[in-house]
Length: 112
Image 1 (cartoon, rainbow, N blue to C red):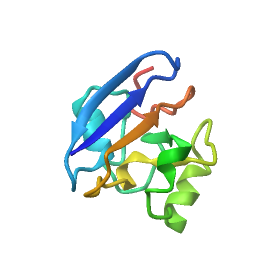
Image 2: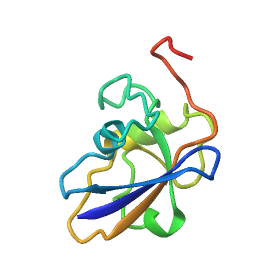
Image 3: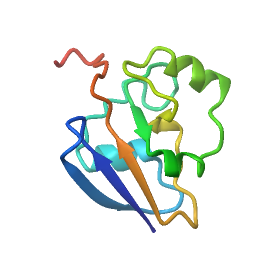
Image 4: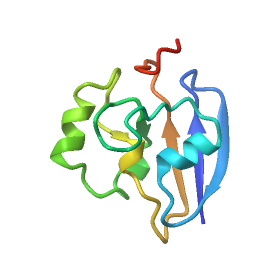
């Protein structure tokens, strides 16, 4: 089990949920009603599931693929520790991960 802390764009609101090894971060976030759209349903054709991983947790992740890096180039407010939540799979041995929602985001669903 991994404790996933979601920090809202305001930096104040924090929610913590439990994820299992093999869970996809996008699914964990959407189950917790986090505002991550995931328009392309994890096909890496958009950047609507862009998140910012805490620097201390970023090293846990395998490197982003070239395709993911290309999509992150389109993400609003991308940082050095930005990733697409659809490309992060929770692994055994991870105790916790802190995920910040970016202050800006692209919403392709037509909802504002």
